[in-house]
Image (cartoon, rainbow, N blue to C red; front, side, top):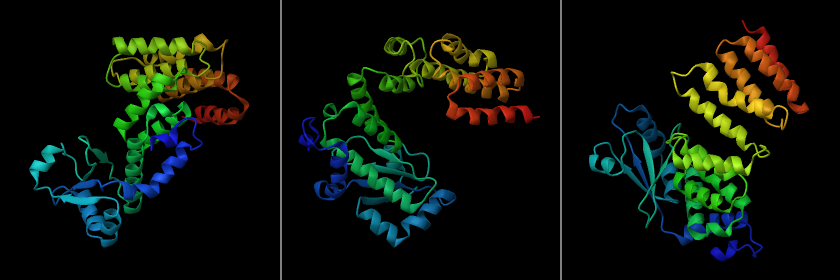
Length: 301
C-alpha cells in the first residue's frame, strides 16, 4: 500500500484511509477484543453485561469486527497478564503485535463504542500499511491529532517523532515538549535542549511558541501547592512584559488567563487591570466577549 502515498502520486491520505474502511475486513485476521468484567458488586461491569454482553445485536455487530472474548473476574491469571485492575476494561489485541490497545469503555454507549472500535481498527491497519516518511507535515498533523483522539498513544508517538524530523516550525516540537514536561523537570537536559530549540525557531512568537511555553510553565506551577499565586502566574506576566509592545497577537490571550487566575484567587483589582489590557490589545472579534468577562468581574460579589 505504500505506493498509494508516494508524494508523486495523486492519491491523498484521505482516499487511502477511506479505501481501507472497505478493504480492512478482507485483508486482515480479526483482532481479539478482551472484555474484563469486575465482581458482581461492580456497577459498571453489570451495565456492560446487561446492555452489551447479553444483547445479541451488540454481540453480532462487534463480532463482525473482532473475535470477542469475555474474561470474568475469576480469571486472575489473565488480569495479571494484562495489568488490569480497573473494571470494566476492554483491550484490543492485533495478530503479530506484542503490545495491546486499551479502549475507553465508560461512559458506555453501545453504538458509540462500536463506532470507536471500528475506527481504531481501521486506523491501526492503515498505519501498518503506509510509510510515515511519505507523508507531508499537513497529513502528519492530521494523523497525529486522530491518533490522540483515539487514545492510540504509541502510534501518536511514532507520528510525533516523524513530525519532529521534518518540521522547520514548532508544532511538533511543542507537542513533544508538552509530553516531556509531564514526566521531567525543566532542568532535565533533554527538556532544556528542546526548549531552546523552540525559542530559536520562533524568537518573535509568530507561531505562538513562546506563549505556549509560558502557558506550560504556568500550568506546571499550578500543580505545586507550596507556590504563591504571584509566583505561579509569573511566566505569563513575564511573557506580557516581553511582547506587549512588539508582537501582540497572543498578549491578549495571556492577559485573559492572568485575569481569570487572579479573579479565582480573590485578587479582583489585579484581575480587572489585566482584563482591561487584554481588551485593549485584543482583535475586534474578541472584544465583545472580553467586555462580558469584565462585566462579570464587576458584578461578582
